[in-house]
Image 1 (cartoon, one colour):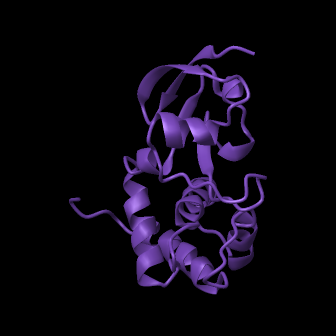
Image 2: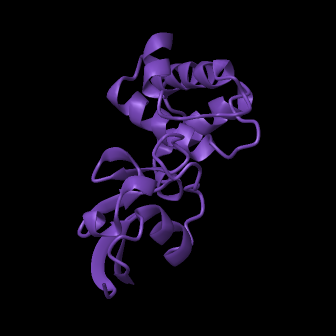
Image 3: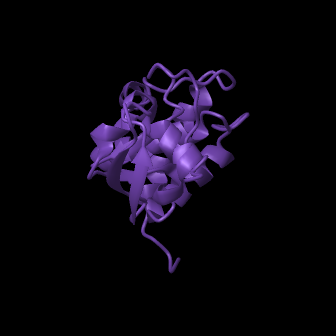
Length: 162
């Protein structure tokens, strides 16, 4: 099957790309657009390292054929940096030990951002459920959950002149 044209917006920028029809969104992001914050973990949708927002929904980009993203809006961890809340979430991860090797961190942060947008004051069990699709081989999850709970508190505080 020959390459096909797709149009998508990634992090607010429009792209017209010539791609293989069954190429994964993950590979297009990493190799065509050089957005390497989205990680290639398991390739089976089990680890969450490749999480991105696709039309406002959190998805495993390793499971999305690029043709399904034609005409879509995609936000990667790099694009999420424009969200003022992301810096506060990342700070909470750093300060509370939710980061070790960092491989899972982009997916964890994207998942936390999505969770906290939907549920600004989650319980520990809700955080655990919200992060259930993300695997970390380093931290044991306790510090990751603590990081998200702290981020929830921080996001409730009035903003200073940032």
